[in-house]
Length: 336
Ligand code: SF4
Image (cartoon, rainbow, N blue to C red; front, side):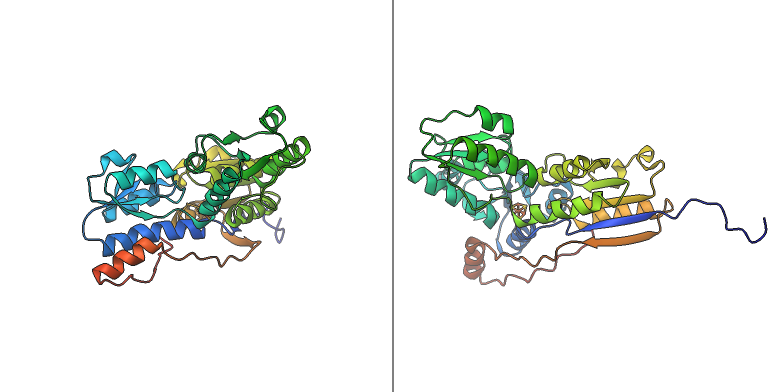
């Protein structure tokens, strides 16, 4: 009929969660490797993935960093960087015994949890560490007091937990857990051990909390959530779970190539977020792909502004000073 509006589906929309992607601890860890490559004369070894993202690891490998699983792969007298997730004192001692020069890129917010573990262990507490037993961060924290720390990751385990002295129990948490799940576990611990001590709320870091708060709003606003992040990234997995818990289908993807066309069938609004170790260029690739599939509108949903920055480790500053080289200012690209 002449003059009638064209009968076509509404234009699609891409909604980007903010904050998303790199946190201050990841920015710092990557910068540590890049600056070390500048100022250290000789190869730079990195124990384990510096952060849990293969795009980040491959980019640093291309620049010259050598990634190893264990210290026995590092030649004597070489320089080794410890990852953002932290290490146990046994690894630090092993490095010393091998005569390695160490630069520690452990996130300061993980170090804070280590310091809390040391203090509670000195005061003879049984320490309940809420976290995933196989995650590098939890392995490192447990190493601070192996005989005193018990790791749990569910309400059921909190209900079953038996300790030697219920009057002398402390709790700590991994930094990248689900805020809601952790609150439920801590509530059980507080009920079962009324004298339990711990941080005022938990040790979940600002970046994890902010990204979960953002994905909650995002999930309420879209038909589908895509979370960019690695399968072994704890905080990225939690983002997918938080979105799904709100009833919105959500998928964790490494990059744009993981998107399946059937996920987009009948979907007009797609939310995109990224874990704390995911580079922004991967988000831009997803936006470009979705835009090519008739989703021309891009909207930012920013729930919190972040301005956290951490200084470089003192070992790196000292190496630069001794070598007479300048530590170049960070100039992190947001693409590639
Ligand atoms: S996620 Fe949190 S604890 Fe982990 S590196 Fe980032 S700021 Fe640090």
